[in-house]
Length: 141
Image (cartoon, rainbow, N blue to C red; front, side, top):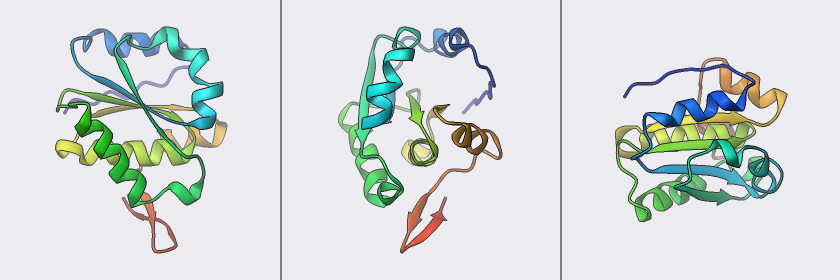
């Protein structure tokens, strides 16, 4: 898998990421807040054939059940090894989406679009992904 890390504050750069992969499937992971408030700001920069996966917001949803739900939606919509998962949200979305993408079919590409300052730092330092388990934060990842 070829991964490319791009740090930019220009949404036109987001469009450039997808130009070489237009024949592949794109998925967007969001929660109800980022879908309502952030998606309208970036939708013109995303591929037209994007499939949305929505999960509930909050740290309490950062668990294996959310990961399974993401895997189910990817499978139901015929995601393959050349698919890309775009994670639009804070730390929970970026952590869950990154983990789900890195384990689905032994790893598909993903792009984090963090929506808060904390998520920007979290997504850019180390690229760690994971979920909470048995009451422990980031236990699996």
